[in-house]
Length: 339
Image 1 (cartoon, rainbow, N blue to C red):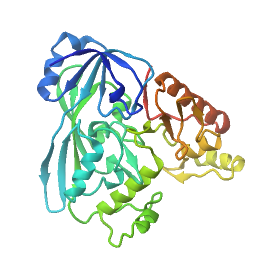
Image 2 (image 1 turned 30 degrees about the vertical axis):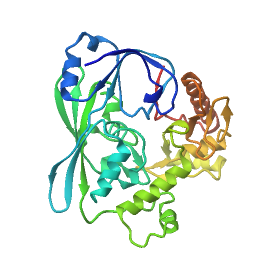
Image 3 (image 1 turned 135 degrees about the horizontal axis):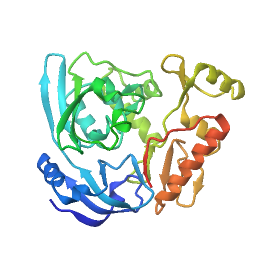
Image 4 (image 1 turned 120 degrees about the vertical axis):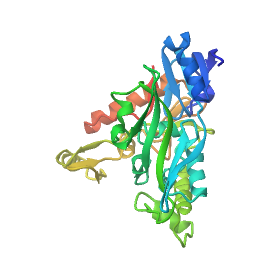
């Protein structure tokens, strides 16, 4: 396996910021992983990336950056109504969704156009338009970075939460995800159309018969109108999570901010759109030189070209502090900042 040095990472992060890794390699097979694990390079500080859509380099990485390029899609098992579909962790997530739609495998169509690779999907339990990965998740396979063992996690093992899993907490940086397996429907699909603008978009698309492709097309249209293509305008999608507060606290906020939106979440919890709070604080469309907040979606921080990672990070911190000062709520970031 080739280990590259002083490697430019601009094309490996969707913010498109310039940063370098002291050492860099591609993982394309289990053999590559075992070879790397047995080498002296394994003792360096390590960082594993997939599509680079959930990371911000605020500085160079002075260690070994491992690009997960494990590919392959395979049916593990199936019956009349369901299929267990396994995908290598390095597959592009959106391309995987489109592959499933082409096979009429239902369950992840609402997650169309989410950037990144399939291996990253369970780490933060990706979700959009009323659907989360955990709805279809069956299992995943991991390589233990400490022991070299290969283990399997089922759904309960992963402890999924809102944009969260065990891999973001006690097992952070412990495992390299090799593959994930989803349980998808082959017929009797369940359609999620009540969230956001899906119903309106389906109507505008003149959809007469509801299908998983029609929903995917609607989601793609909505996301394209709101979130810029990282190939054209550097970004990592939603930078912050939507916070949840107790109902009592939410009523207190509503007394001060009568128009604040909220949606019932778990027991006695209300989810507040972070984008609304950011926009209320005056950040939507605000620009600082070569970076700024997108003018169509306040959750998206963008790099107009030539922006530095440390400046994007500072902008995010300033937004977070502004929201905390105004609403008493500290936003949690979705993006991993390397600083």
